[in-house]
Length: 221
Ligand SMILES: C[S@@+](CC[C@H](N)C(=O)[O-])C[C@H]1O[C@@H](n2cnc3c(N)ncnc32)[C@H](O)[C@@H]1O
Image (cartoon, rainbow, N blue to C red):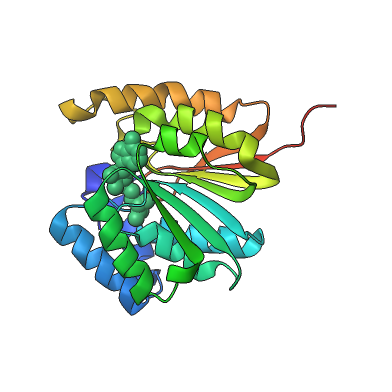
């Protein structure tokens, strides 16, 4: 569980919900332990579970993720996809991508996942095809850029999920970590733009670290 100042909920409520969280698969639990040990930031388990629910409820067959890290959110998404589903996931860090590939193999989802190595903005520009889900979890300063490039590749009715839109409380309150001042400011600019985007029906759910959720609307006639 995160330290209290980082939580949206009061401590007792957060602890209560943590106790109710269903146990994760062995591979997911192992990735959580590895991430903690190596200090790799990953989504909270409740956000992982939400991604699983979104994939199943929306009938997602093709998912696109920016920010693979060591494959935690990717394992949630890929495990929920149908057997012919596909997750394309991007990260700039070769060591993390190698570890993610190992985890995808251990989770038995490697054949559903394509890992692309490189800066998200560049790699996104080269991706073709249509997607049902876009999950943003890499550089906060680039969320707007990721969405600008990826939105035309999302089908109408497809969904966008973004992690960390409240950034440990810093977006709505004050910056606590000096090295997160620029990312906090970027999220302050991104959030209203995302919520008011004419092609999206969007909101920020008080889940995890503030989870953006949007549905792509049909183009205006
Ligand atoms: C918060 S982690 C992703 C966590 C992952 N989604 C999960 O929950 O398991 C952010 C990742 O973005 C990657 N990253 C940072 N800058 C990037 C960039 N410009 N393009 C692509 N990935 C980047 C980092 O290497 C890091 O692994």
